[in-house]
Image 1 (spheres, rainbow, N blue to C red):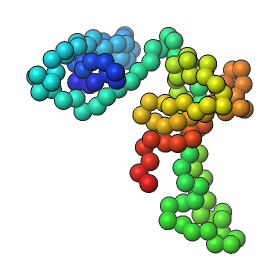
Image 2: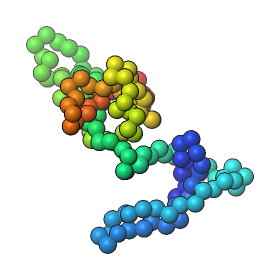
Image 3: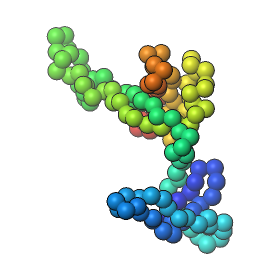
Length: 137
């Protein structure tokens, strides 16, 4: 397909190359320099980071602590509490994200703002969502 690379060109995937297991190994792509002249309008924009340089982290995202549409009544908190209000994901970040000031939020492209979690260890870095960019409320 055709996609815009964030901050760069529009590219077209010409070939999907798979390994012996049938898994995708890499893509052969072409840059479309004159996409607007050709009337090509990609449906999406992507951002990627290099597999060899990225760093594995844990990311916490948060949603409403109460179930949708529920109102607190004394003694009924356990019935309306959203047990899925926090989600934990494994993700990858560019190395500079780990070098930023620990008390300053950084933006994860197209996701939101995240801050370093002080409970991170030498082996596991955690980022907590502070503001989502995809909130419809």
